Length: 98
Image 1 (cartoon, one colour):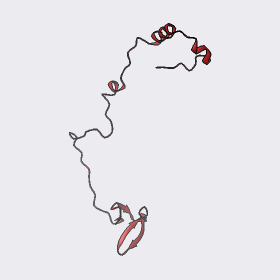
Image 2 (cartoon, one colour):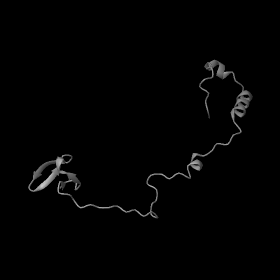
Image 3 (tube, one colour):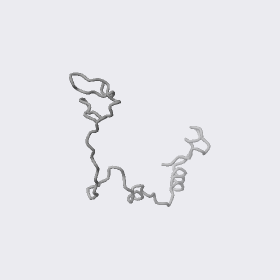
Image 4 (cartoon, helix red, strand yellow):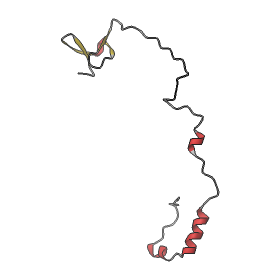
């Protein structure tokens, strides 16, 4: 039930004096005749990230590893040579994995 925080507060003594009929009448008066609109009805036409893209054709051009790049032996990502931290037993390791 909605609460009107701007309404003046009443003491506990005043709250105890309310009759059952008065409380029922306030409850029916406070109920509105408007219908709540479900947010999911409004969002039906929006595409969300991670949506099913099975029907879409996606082409990505894959480039081979360049001369100034290396593959980290721990995370297996291709990095630029500037990210090379160390070489242990012939294994190249990036700065993030050190």
